[in-house]
Image (cartoon, rainbow, N blue to C red):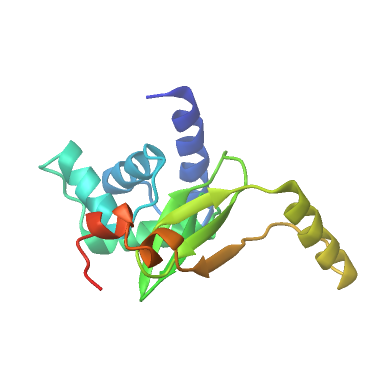
Length: 161
């Protein structure tokens, strides 16, 4: 296991103990899969990744959902509402901050970081009498590729208009 993932897993274990939860093999498998990908994933995607690694796993979808909730509450992962009732997650612990632009039609997610925007967000917090500790910016729209009829992401998802 990569040193970074090992250190992050130890932090997760400590968080689970702090909130009164046991560290179990299924939780370890869930964390390994979540921390082992750089893609956005649903709970179902994560379970599929776990089962691909270990077809004999005892991990169930309900355990994945509960574990993701604890990981999100501990700021190890971030949940993204991508529209139409869909929720994706990404491993954020130990990673640089970034924001998201999400196409509500095809589901494409673009990550970006803009220092000017960061300054504006910090100044807005100050103007309202806050000290910003963390934030999340999501811009929802429709990708231009889809409007032009050439969205590869939409076609890969097997949707029709």
